Amino acid sequence: MTRKTRSDCTVGTFEKKHGLPAGTIRNADGRDTRSDKKIGTIRKEAERNQK
Image 1 (cartoon, rainbow, N blue to C red):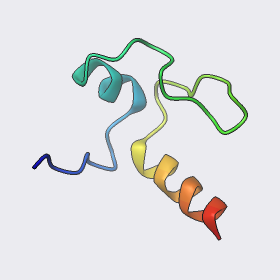
Image 2: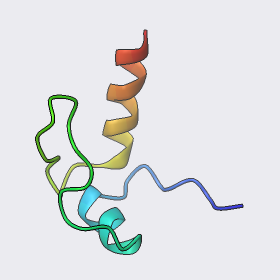
Image 3: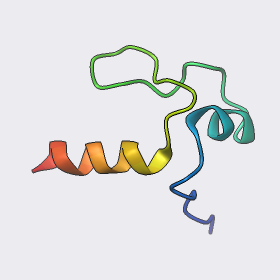
Image 4: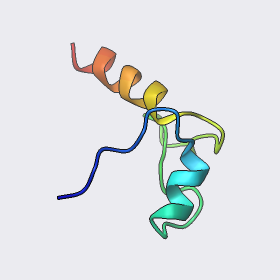
């Protein structure tokens, strides 16, 4: 079982850590997510969009 990624981890660090090419994580509109955006922010946005 893998651990949940820390919310203060950035997108760029997450992509490097998991061996993903830059630009893998995208915004809802299809554009690349900024590499300095935090994972916690993405989770909050996703939670808001589910309601």
